[in-house]
Length: 527
Ligand SMILES: [Zn+2]
Image 1 (cartoon, rainbow, N blue to C red):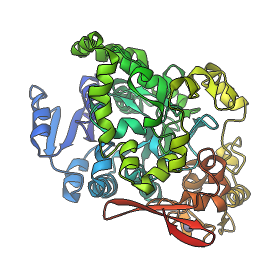
Image 2 (cartoon, protein in one colour):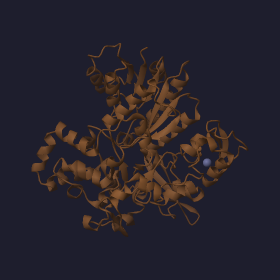
Image 3 (cartoon, protein in one colour):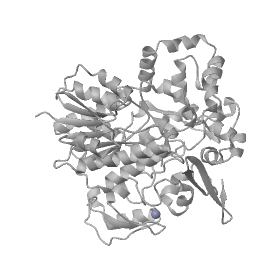
């Protein structure tokens, strides 16, 4: 029997390699894709005109339209929801980001629910849900707190859409939190927007290539049909490229700039990039998807070599002095509306506070690289660290780098009972109000209460295993983790790695303008 695999976002960085892998699979899938009716999407469709419609069905529509989602899901056996407005686009059109990433995702999930025989659903979420990390806790895993960075609407929509799916009764699903994806247009996109300056020099990043991601998506279907996915469905996972792809912001830039004859230090200055409020993590649990689906084949070096081969013009830049490229290509981006240095110049104080803490912190940043501690060189503000050792997940597990989830997470799921729920709720500053549960049943919803008295029903899986908590106060917007961390030890254990206890900020957008308030001596003051 021919299986139908439906895709959203098929023309995107992850969607295209997924589509290509599915079409190349010897299982002869019928692939149905939803493309927007735009010139660029039609141009994309034309590159597949030789594929017969019995193999590739193209629907023109939009996930923001419920009817289009129903057409996509009708009769499908699998639905892979990859469509999203991602940074930098998401930073420039907040309302479209909310409507696409949240409303659109709800439409997709509801279209799945509406089918008599529901397709198996794979939803692509993001590493951005975890928010900012630095060398103190560079490691993360599913179940860690969700602390999307301030003013990152993209991350906020991912948290909310995940929550909607987790709280829904979609029968068979998987949420995959995608890490930084190395795709063919990354370098070109990066030298167009101030987004490149959001990458903190010392933020951990575990890259994966677009082709490996596409292979993962195809293998999920292939292996599922071969009966090799026992225990996989109805869980959340992290996608990552493993140890060889663990970098920081600094060595990622360094590798990319080599192609055009430069380096992080010859093209950039320490103060240009924000020291926090980014997102990125090294995963102790990304091996789980690899063990299931054997999709990893490319390293970051492989990727840069492919980029260099595909764009021989980049090599010409090697004949120019780095100073010229720095001046002509990079420095002009400092004035982009998405660049932290532009926020400083134009006194966008809420964005400056979120990114730097304060303007004083900018003045204190070393002007020269020789004075700036670079983690991938083993340098810390107050000493040295073994960068290779730090990137080893076994080292992380045995040296106290894992965050506390508030209950004994070494217990098998089948042993978790109401006492574990109470302990987890208490670590989140709240309570589990349900008086009993069936031991090991992580799917039946229980009643919870947050520190602020909001009551909500969620499954033990959603709270203990997926890292979600109060849907009223812990899901931006607004962003008020400074305040929440005071009552929620689960958040505090990582929040204060990059925030001061006295910050007390509440951040939000008003008419698309970033604003914030801060509690000072019991009085709310504008930031
Ligand atoms: Zn609450």
